[in-house]
Length: 221
Ligand code: PMT
Image (cartoon, rainbow, N blue to C red; front, side, top):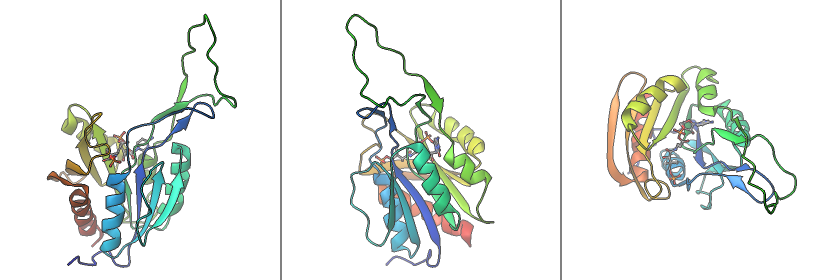
């Protein structure tokens, strides 16, 4: 039986991957399916929380009893997260957010020209949503959780990212073309700003989600 230890709490979860359009036909994207974020949303709802799920380009059905806000780009994700975070007890950023977007959006489809090399794609920085939420906590005691998707030096990179982003908890998971993205299972180490390290063995994404909510609930008490 699930304890309703998040009853009366409002939590915000982001899921999926942002897409940054180049023209009406093409975008820069990533391999996130949204499964980890949806597992977080479902488990929080089962523990009694009111859940706002900000979903970027996912193909998953809306979880029952969860408010779903659909977005496309990192800029749209930022607006939706900041709006929802204003009254939230916890914000968990499981979405894979593009760090950069094309500097120029071509209103018409970019054409291939014969005898001409392709133009390089100029990029500009996207806002760092997690760092912004952590720096400007909407209310005292709001718990801010990030994820770190790493391919090498996973823990060292995760520790550095925790400091840089200023969040309370950072879930460090290893990713690859066929690892974690789209999978039913995950494994991770959850780093705390207090120096704690909670390893979560390979298992369903729901199991990792439950551990995240255990740690969030501890910090909300
Ligand atoms: O969706 P699935 O297929 O289930 O896969 C799950 C997952 C691999 C996407 C997920 O577990 C995960 O690791 N999500 C975070 C992906 C990511 O963007 O990691 P990052 O290390 O690039 O970013 C670190 C943190 O900053 C993340 O919480 C991210 O949401 C946030 N961020 C990043 C860039 C940016 N401009 N703004 C942000 O808020």
